[in-house]
Length: 54
Image (cartoon, rainbow, N blue to C red):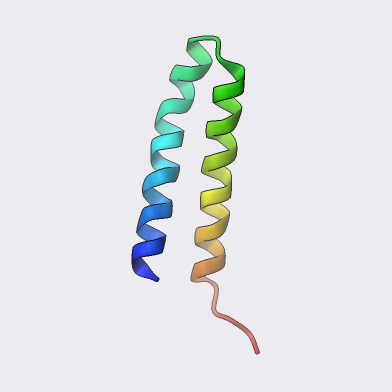
């Protein structure tokens, strides 16, 4: 589980890092993809860190 969280975090960080470069380059489609990727990775991390309720 920790490996999955680490990989999601790394992917989110890369997307967040590259987002302003895509915006500056005038590539709105790539910027939106990076924004969505970062958001979905952060949401997945939250779900994995939330204890399962039976």
